[in-house]
Image (cartoon, rainbow, N blue to C red; front, side, top):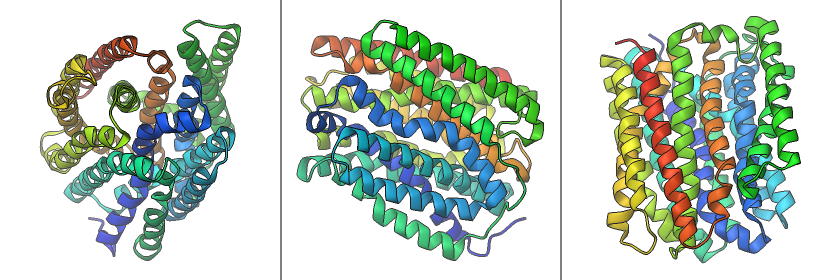
Length: 448
């Protein structure tokens, strides 16, 4: 059984590193209205404040995982943290929207380096039940840390201004770097070739498709520009698949990974579930703040979500080692779907306890059942030499689901008054359908 020389430091370093990416996403969501007012940003601009981060994160996670298998996982982890921290400082100092979006892109690149390698380091350092406990703890503590992002971000937006939300990344990054250098052992050097051509095609394809969907959702009509972007995205995506097929095992997304029903099912599962979740995390605080909540109130409104995931993930990591992932991954999304149905009660003018909390609590419970089992199932499906690629791919699918959901949220963000609430309720029904589809995928593709 593998045992790292500094197991606690290894676990803490990977948790802090990945929490940077998780906290940043949740904090920015509660700051969107303030950013829009300060920088005179339109609905499409606000979508790109999120998508400028999610696009490189989605497209480059695969390359980030493969780069860790090639150059060394600790090296890529530390490099990603440094880049993320520098970009956070640039976000805080950005004088206008253009530079803010550019810095968000760099943040996404840094996150794409650190996220798959934090998980890959855990998979390499632990085995058996220790791996299940480590991954469960990683998911639980990361979720708890993320839980305090929205309230802290809301308070900073109210008390200091939206730029302060990016400064909170700096002390976390400094501590993560110190722990990684002291406690994490290097692994993965020279094991995987890099696929720069595939990464370029993936980035272009996701960028074009996201642009097309953003234009459609903000304008509510397919303009000529949207059609051009959609066509370019589809063509480039086909070229990406062709390149990956020709590269075989040297591809950043080896098509051989899709040779099993379980892997295909987990891929569809991740896209559907995290697509539903991504739309909620962006839209709910926006609707609440627009409807009269302060940023800090909206942040606290989301607190039960991440806190609930954090409390349940460690226990589910242990349980999955005993009973397997099929039933947790089936029942969890069904509970999430029920939570989205309860979101039809959301009204900023009504009581939080009866209109918002029931849906959030149900979604948190369902996600707590799914997060750790999904991660464990994906990492267990590949050999040690490809754990970076596997974790990067699954994270990329999750971020892509969130990216697509955010790009399609313009129809909700562009609405106002009663129409905004109605549009949000329609989005909640879509989320419920996506979560139910994820449950079906897990049940049909995984064995007992």
